[in-house]
Amino acid sequence: MNDPITRLPGRRFLHSPGPTPLPDAVVHAMSVQPMDLGDPRVDANIAACEEGLRQLLQTRDADVFLYASNGHGVWEAVIVNLAAPGEAVLVPGTGHFSESWAEQTEALGRRVVRTPWREGWPIDVAALEQALRDDRGHAIKAVFAVHTDTASSATSEIAELRRALDAAAHPALLVVDVVASLGAVPFAMDALGVDVAVGASQKGLMCPPGVGFVAVNSAAFEVAKRNPAPRFYWDWVRRKSDLSYRKFCGTPPQNLLFGLQAALSLLFAEGLPAVWQRHSQLARAVHGAVDGWREGGALDFFVQDPASRSHSVTTVTVGPGIDVEALRAVARDRFQVAIAGGLGPLAGRAFRIGHLGDCNPAMILGAIGGVEAALLTLGVAAGTGAMRRAVMSLAQG
Ligand SMILES: Cc1ncc(COP(=O)(O)O)c(C=O)c1O
Image (tube, rainbow, N blue to C red):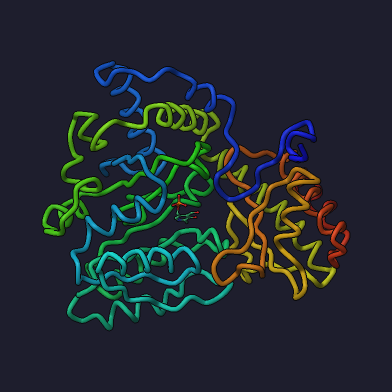
């Protein structure tokens, strides 16, 4: 038996940008026997999840619809509820995840207007505004924007997208994917003028994969009501009900929802400003480490503008000849630090360190140390000051 997990004691550090580690309280909360659907604990749990998500998304009135699904599922919910086949949506380029959402939209028979992805940069807001101005007939029904593209690790300013829509006087709905940003950075849905927010359980929400959710304001709900496109499982109109069986279009994923309720309680007990501050501090430590490594010449940040670097994940590009998959394997198997690879156009060109969710300074230093040990093992030219910079950054708070 040469499975490295069984040979090495201690915990393997999970630093993919989702799934992320589970707090013990979440694991314990899920460790319950399933209940009959009339058990009052079922409805109370669902109500707590809906209300907790509203609080986290900073919305008063939006309806929250929860699904037994991953992120792709809730992408599909948005597509089929907000646009009929043949109708158009605008997807501003952020990288792999905007393109995946766009392709899914096209696969479902909707038209997609794209603004170009600028590698290493957030959404091109000027291009977005121009595309909206060019759409004089208002054929575009919605803008589908990814807040943090987990592949590029760039975060875009949602307020700027809202300003672009308003400046162009365009009535399209603003739909934002907060899958990788929620719980790591503030997101005030109502104040930002966002019509629909789309999220999933396995990243900043510190739960296993398997719960997707949307928060839908009244304007977006009205569009869904008028939309004749055939749909059933994803349909918001069908799900707007007091009955849990209707809300979930069937049996709710009970144990996952108990985990979600516990995770939300942890976030509120810590306090959202403290949660955001912790993510900012951990991100700065990782950025400090990358600043150290890049002095060796082989590694660099993918995101050029420090202000656009995500607080959830950092994408590190590697020079020619560096085998990212070998690096990941050594980091995972020898040093027990699991990191992610590059996705889409960045496959083979980058690795990614996740620093979101149930994460603290010791875990971040462990991750940086494990990655550095793997870099040294493979002879990658990395600067030597990375750990020192990370420690200094944490010490400064
Ligand atoms: C920003 C973003 N949106 C959507 C998705 C898709 O989520 P899932 O893999 O759960 O389908 C991901 C997955 O990592 C993501 O990072």
